[in-house]
Length: 80
Length: 467
Image 1 (spheres, rainbow over the protein chains, first blue to last red):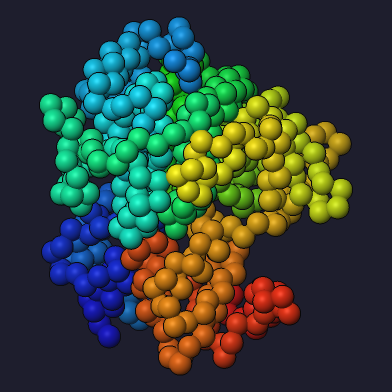
Image 2 (cartoon, rainbow over the protein chains, first blue to last red):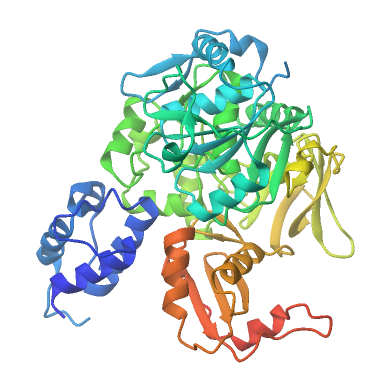
């Protein structure tokens, strides 16, 4: 499964519904769900979001933004 | 009229509630606004307040208490079926909710009352008799929308506020902000304490993880903060606490669950005596005990000493913590008729928590007798959960066990693979994320000879399924 599909799956699990790439995620999540999603992304891709990356909620505003952020941090060579 | 707040505060020009973005209302103005709304709500009527994090909602909570109407605080995103059950059971005369809420399409708004983004709806139900001492109703388990309600009196609210304000050095002129949901006792009490002493309550629906929340915190020079251990975890992830956020701090309290030892030590080191551990219960009008430990004498796992209005004792047989206080609720209601019942607790309650008290008076919690768990800061009744699931799947038996932040559900039936359905149902309707639930099919639910469910046996059977 590629990064985008995996992220979509995690987002859908967190939001409890199917989502489109541009759909506004923050309207569907409270802080708990967002934290849950952040932890799931970190576990899945073995990455760590920096405090300022998390605090800038625009990074999690829609699936496309998340894909962009994860891709910038994810090294597929790193063992999962 | 019975007062929840101090007389001198109700007339003051101090700001009671603000959104920190230009909207603000003083205590005097709130009183005047309440008098205008009084004509739309019959005296001593039962009002369901479907709460969100909007300034208008906070105003309505204040005003219903001020006017001696009797609010039941519920979440605005409560599951429809649960809300319908509560409506048919207690038959409130009014429902206050955001204008876009489904109930706004069903019931008629009070004509001539303009509440901006919210509506006060008339249900058409007859007024019910409510005991004159009852000031407020809270659900014993907000998540499951439990029909069992805690009846709090005017004296309960006044007593709890008086002592909380005293212990926490709260006073007029201070500013408080909390992400806690106001329909939970801890979130409600935080508001109440501010209103009691004439302090200013900031209301924001910003996510705590976001920079906007932090910016508001700094700009508003927040003095008082309350959250759960899980929220403190989130704040740690974004390095929230620093010189700027702590500059004006009077207290930051953690309650509504046990904080990890590491986090407690870190926060005590960081905030020193500004950091408080608190312990409370809805039945005790929120706070029972709390302490701002010194880093050199910190007692990990302790929830601190009982506040001066609380007399704690331990049941010699069961080890259960018992509390005597004027803050103890009048009792529970399970139907409309119970709202009229007298105080049955007489200032004493068994908390359901197993505890011990050391020689210095510090309380240590060791477990629970009652079947409640905390999932992501929400109190969940396992019995209610079983009932809810049974209502959804009448051909299946359920047995729920759990601990904080995890629930295990045993179920029977011909279909062995309902795990995902059950999880999805609870995620969607109860807001319990799937990852905190484990489901386990079993041929039959183990029971004692008396017919009662043998939860010990279920624990053994599902051992290994639990986190």
